[in-house]
Amino acid sequence: MTLDEFYAEFMQSIYASAGANSDFFESVFTENMCEFLESQGIVDDYALVQFKKTSLGMRLDAASYDEESERVTLIVADFRPTSGLESLSLTDIEKSMRRVERFFTESKKASFYQTLEESSPGYAWARQINEKAPKISRIQVIVISNAELSKRVGTLPEVKLDGYRTSLGIWDIGRLFQVESSGKAEDMVVDFGETFQDGIPCLHANCSNGQYESYLLIVPGKLLADLYDEYGDRLLEQNVRTFLQFRGKVNKGIRNTIIREPSMFFCLQQRTQCNGRGSDS
Image (cartoon, rainbow, N blue to C red):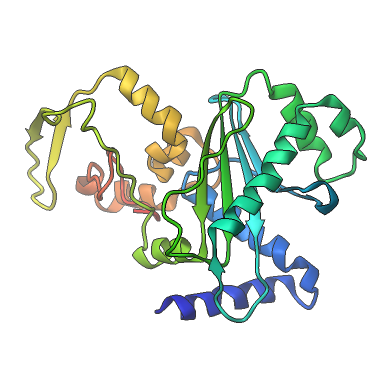
């Protein structure tokens, strides 16, 4: 399947879910993308916000707050209701960033959420940001789009939000296509060059199965803590996180592996930690 074919099918599913009401296209797109990001371990327990104030240059389509890590995720959508695949430019990204940044900055002021109707989509999150502001450890801004990220976009722009540690992620239709086509979660690449210039000493773990190789290694606990702070739940396999913490739907894949192929339970499946083969392996 080509990207254009994937785009056509993706948009058709959006139209089918929204029905005849075109006003719901963007809402369905946002929810579908958030469900996908949740399945990838990028967001957890998200809420649809869909707050727009064009006159004030504000927008927030979805958000998530992790109490444990005190991380805020702000999601803004760039949806194009077109039949043909369009390009997501650096200008488009910066425009979306400014809108979500302004929402966050204004939300830190109690006077902002107090001017909103309590039934307003943005009221709850504006108030939560105001109350959580002193505790927030980092902010993750995600731009979701059904356009394809332009090849002219090299380094992503730096996001600065009132001194908070902030990162920017772009999930365009091309990135979605790559993950869906591979049939597994997106790989993470961590460069240990600066910490371990000569590599990480490993011990080969002898496994009688012969279908895969496993290794044992030791890394400092602080390094693991820093990695988890950077990547959050993505550092763990989504099905292990679900299976152990009972969040969301129980991953049938890990259960099936234990029952049907117990010898494969330890297999890494191109991951950074041990895991049974679940739906995202």
